[in-house]
Length: 370
Image (tube, rainbow, N blue to C red; front, side, top):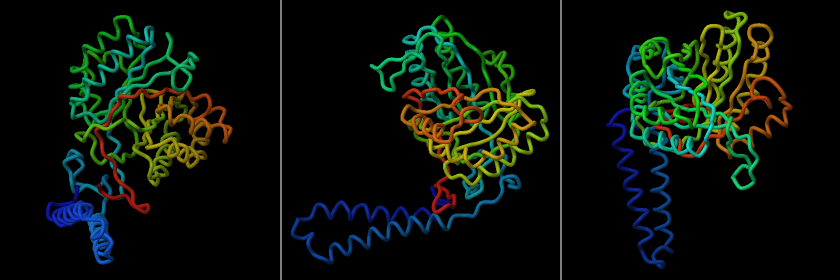
């Protein structure tokens, strides 16, 4: 996706030539491929394609701060000139209902149907679910399985309130079926900008939900929705705190956001507030990225917990393949308590979740448009 059609045309032409030539090369006879000139031409065509790709990326517009951009009111996916190294505003809406499981096989069938039904929604950022696993079972991957009493967490995100409300209407049958015995609702949290939260206040499905207003944060989601559905791979950490000194806590939160802005693996990171509860929502492309982030902000988190706030709970949501990496990190650093520690509750992300977002790409430490 280039800055303009005029810039994209040379790139598309060169890539097309390189692709056609590469296919032709493998169709010629083995004896002809031995000629040095043929191989030399092949290398030149490949080099030309790479150079064109790099030049188009490096010549794209330099980003400006979104806080001062006149395009802030423009939907991100449509604002093609709003790009570059600066992160985007933290405007993501996340719907986070938590349930207690009573009948896991029935719950799993309903949730798989829930995810399948949601794939038709192009306005969604990502959708999936994760569960705690308490029962040892050597017959399943990971040696642990769900049982009655385990928790179910829905991982749904949207670019705006309209997309969220359309989603609630679409999945009402699955939500009703889930509450008819397979699971019971513990609570709902909705996190997002104040203006978008106000649009959702009267939704029947959100009655009793706790609304968390965005305080500060950043996003690397260049396109928040509308992309091709891909497997949901992000590793997310949800940590909540009780506020004692809101002003001091918010100053430290902004400091942590500034530190996180330099982390290439971060997908989004930010802080929301509801009453005296402060919550950090953050997601990374891999467990390694999250571990590095924890190391980078350790001193700031210590200052946050030294008076301004106290830790309530933490939830880690990751695939089965990512969890061992984080377990090793916790063991090596002896993180027994606190932020991203042994006491952080682990949720196993189920297969089948998907995402429709696109993120900024990083090359040699500089963020570029895709």
